Length: 203
Image 1: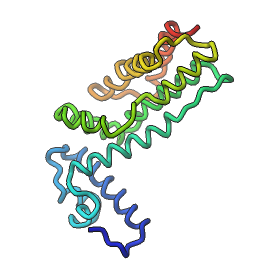
Image 2 (image 1 turned 120 degrees about the horizontal axis):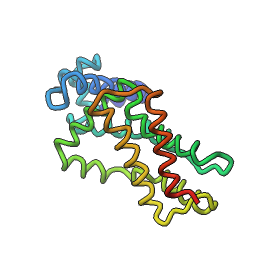
Image 3 (image 1 turned 30 degrees about the vertical axis):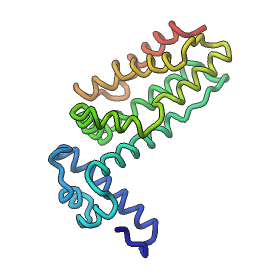
Image 4 (image 1 turned 135 degrees about the horizontal axis):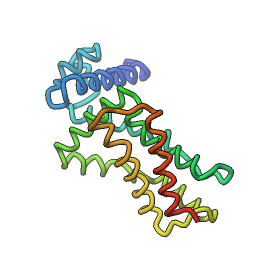
């Protein structure tokens, strides 16, 4: 049970430290082998403190995933701007997806998350049910671009899925399973991908 006499900011800092320690444990030892003891060691706290904040390893995993998504969602908070080119704005959405892999620590965590989800499809279903649609901001942007007469989008949800699939197929998945690329190496492929997408949907 949490110590009710402890200031909330201290509780929050400990919770963040535990999640950071868990990430280190997951990356170094793998999710299955990372014990709560090892997580506590990496976090620099006692195992009891870990259990005060998280009931089990699955609960901790979900908290890490939620924080990961929250950080990415800040980049996805993109609103249609009629003064900017479509290319500029679609690049922002692509870069928000590349957040998963454009830093060595995030790339390592992305590999752990991917491995866990591939091994536990039930966990994938449970996790999806907890969060909203993954492309909501892009769907809203596409609808606004359509209303502005700059794009022709018969089905915004489908168009968003297509764009996301292009990013994942061309950029994300190769980085997860092959040699990672630098931001500079991403640029030519990203630009061609956006041109291809706009060739289909630009009005």
